[in-house]
Length: 288
Length: 288
Image 1 (tube, rainbow over the protein chains, first blue to last red):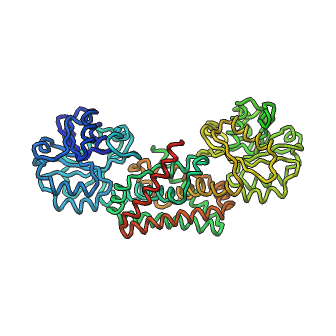
Image 2: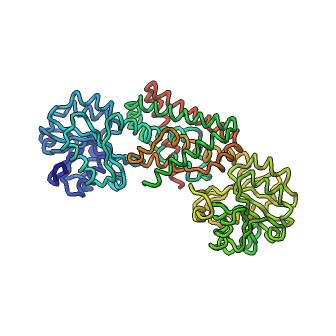
Image 3: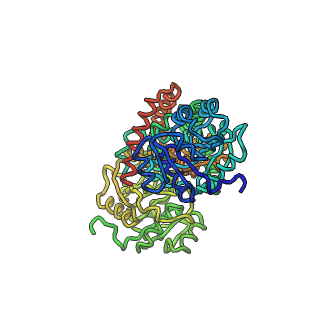
């Protein structure tokens, strides 16, 4: 199938954490030959012994890396850029590479100027995750019903883009969309990063341990994502700083508006916000 | 059983909305004789035709009301106070009354001075709900695994308190606790009202309809409660104004702290909040 992700492709996963493990699992189950690289030998052993990959290494060498025509980078943004700088000579000419990085504009600003011109890079963002990390928690069922974003670059090779979209379909993603890097970062700043900020702030307001017995679903739902990988998220926040600050300010403005309405007991203004909120939220139920 | 909720008790539910319907359903299923009152004839018909109550009326008269030894008020706070002012003479001497109101201090300030002295009032708050309203959406399975709060008043009759606690057990609540009105309102201001404020503000930040296709679970979880009954919640907010403003300010302070840390790229300060958040949230998982 033209533009598809042929079954004879060989996929190398660089970074065998939660997300890398999910990619490895999904692609191995679909019948692809999958290899892996991670600096942590226990992650490598886990990946091999659990059949997530056929072969995996803790070191990078051209003989191993160049056997793969497709490479997925499941690394934190800065480590991904370092890897490319240090090891991209190991990639075979024409290799298709993609990633799972949660921010795009600042990553591309750093990566594109140094990337070899004979490599096809299709940035992507699988919109799925868990509150735990590590390959031992990998479970590719998180891809079912999840959204997958492919980033459109001005000089993207259409067949490479379609190959990555096809790979996402193979892995079980429900809806696959294309966005520009800027559209992606605004969307992710609002839908994902702002919500994580809110959850963290709510959880750090006070020592709430004595409140566990009284907690209804509301507080649990709003703080589920307050269990957060501080290394990864602080890096993602800084890498999307301008956009995230704008989203935080937008939220603070609305929050201040509601606070003021309550303060002066302006029930009309409060109800107006609640009705708009109810109307908008209904859309998210319908299409779920 | 001493202090229990004997099977021969007759329970009248005043207000056949979502919560009144859940009480009626749970108590009828447990074998109690349950009656109902609502000004809306379609709610009354639904309650009778679906077997949630044995008998129901759209009007209040002493002949009907005085047949019940226990009355549950499932009304908005102000309507509850009006009902007592207007109709409390219909209650039989010694009637046990309880409620489901989401705020307590301001309610008790208005209600206790006017309430007949021969009525035992045990305020309560079932910590359960749905994003939809109306008796047609009543489903008492929402009580399973939910928390139930009983309010301790200085002159509470212990046997009446234990009867309401027993009723909560009969209806399937998991954990039943006693709090003072002030403890309740602080707790509910933080766990429930603040979280609803946040959800409403997040949902009103921007027209997010085009974002539905990219939404992961985070945004859906944080805005589930953004579908909100604006009549009820605006009244509850105003009735707990002092406490809710304090909780909103606490949250804004933390949010401002995180925003400042991001603004100056203080990764250490961001990580510190994330680690505290992760540690505290873990408690809520364990005991779930």
